[in-house]
Image (cartoon, rainbow, N blue to C red):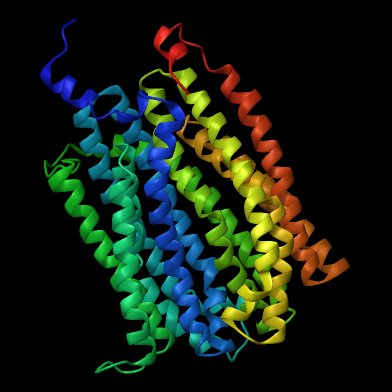
Length: 467
């Protein structure tokens, strides 16, 4: 059957189904790495400036981390769901469906975040008391989270938009959008926190306002790119059934993914409350360590953002052998990067801790974390890549099961056992052990339980594709 001009134009958008696999993954991951670096720096900059206000302020921000992760996890779930279905539609060459899915995904994000924020504002006090926040820190938490919740829509919608852009195989633009957010935050943080120039000193509230403004800028830029350049947003009012079909396709992957992403911060919240029994200083140290950890894991985050579109487009185009090789190479790299980060953080743990705070408990907590947990980073990377691959392969419940294994079955019970036997260091040792067991299990599950069962197309092109 002859190929129409429209089909040819659409086919060209499936950028990830041809070319050397390693080179393609590197080409996509490098620009994404800069974007992830920017977002990690975004959080670390907040932590750095807030740490200058005092230990209570630093502890308050650390207590907010699990709740912020819940919202981010929810947003990421919708983003992954949107990216998965959009990337498959691109691989199939269905341009109209790409527009419909992207537009409906953004609309769904706006609807759900409105409900989420309403609940969040009404539950600030009980949630953070449950996390173990002491009375002297609660006013600071309320101050920060009230502003943060009101701007949560600017967190969720850009994640969905950026994931839609990445589904096309473009990682440069989402990275540039992230870097814009970082630049805005770097400028506004010191101005609003400390009251520079004509601005009043707002302290922790200033950090929250800077975050909201920076995220709002990313939303505007992402929408501009999606509508004007990529033509992935349509203003055509669709039948209700069409929107509902889009939402079902997105939520089939997005809800389990959001669930897995929410399970993680819930477990982090439990661990935070456990660490809180050792004092606010220990919680502050945990907050610093986890933000530093984000730097070590940013390579995994970047590669994880790439492997989803890569798997989705190749699945849509029926390039199954190429898909499997891409996953294999990504996992091999994750192990090598994890080993490198373990060595670097072991050596640099103490100077890193002293950079943020000089309280002895804060410093010792940071050192303990950065010398125990990184031993598991390689297999944690394998776990992350495996979960994303399962989601895009339309097996989200298997990804949920892996996350439950890592967090609920392993992480939380082992942390309580470790705390009883070895104190705070035992909690961090439990983190490493849970990562190792879950990462190994995820590798075996994906390799033998899923990838081997994919039918192998007799394609000379796939067989001859350079690595």
